Image 1 (tube, rainbow, N blue to C red):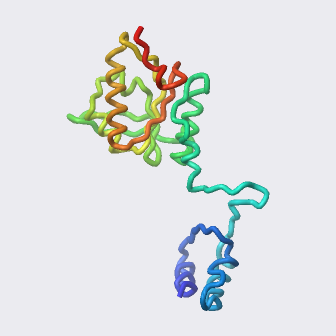
Image 2: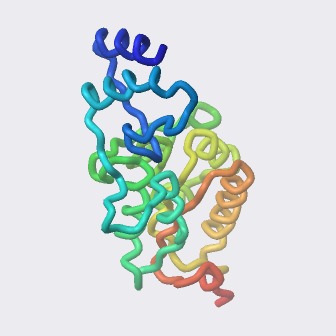
Length: 201
């Protein structure tokens, strides 16, 4: 059945992409009536290019978890070349170079809009000043969380009572994104750890 199905699909020019934890010759190994499955294996080997994603000389890698490894660190300070590190996370999740990710307009409450400088595959690259220096509120941050699954927030300055409006908006922003399960990647100008971001003086 599989051979007839894929004979038809491939004959119509359908591109077939699949992953497996076994090479074609090991598919359905020791299965019942495997001899009926062998023609499909030969078809796969003839019509498809097989890539080995785990060379024998390297350690096994679960490619499904590659982004999880990248996202173990979501806080970058200047000591870590923050923008470059955040850009690496953006490019990993967005599957596109940051410089090639186009800008987009985010529709806000009361007919307003916000320009997001770089957007790709549900990931937004936004300067802190565009959200927290501007007159944005919780409804605007909600629109951001509903549109994107990850927000890369760059240029976050030290926060204190001296810039209490920006600090308040930042807190509301993080609350809204957290509430709606939107991930936040932070590139900050000074604080090496989240606890160091806010200063009382």
